Image (cartoon, rainbow, N blue to C red; front, top):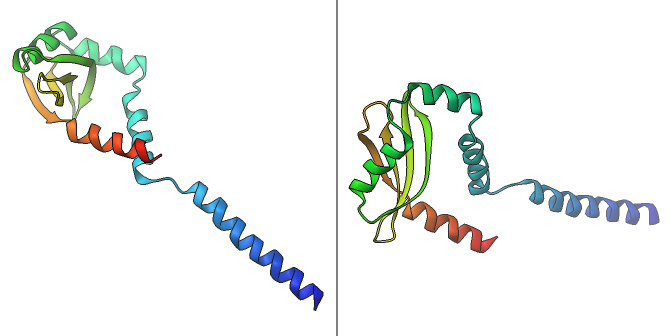
Amino acid sequence: MIGTKILASVLALGVIGGGAVGTNLVKPAAAVSQQEKAKEEKQDPNEQAKLQKEAAITKEQATNTVLQKYTDGTVKEVELEDEDGTVVYGVHVTAKDGKSYDVKVDAKTGKVTKSEDDSKDEQDNGKENEND
């Protein structure tokens, strides 16, 4: 009888303790995607050198192209990237209205190939961070 009570207590603690450990191992999807994104953004120097050889324009030229489109904007970051087999400069710019954009400039032609509004993503990330 005492052995049964001890066994029941041990089992109950195992279930509760296992649940607590399990919940610590589960990461929110947003946290996982941020970690994966950070890994993607960290490019090795060899990759950067290879991309640089393929680029026909400079980082400064790409920056100037973006600032012509987003007059009075502030460039936060510029990095050389491979986007679907095309070498582009990824330029993160904040426009004068406060919105953030991720602009892709073709590193061979100097033309803007894509511009995405990142403001919503940044607002969502800020909300997630507030809850952590």
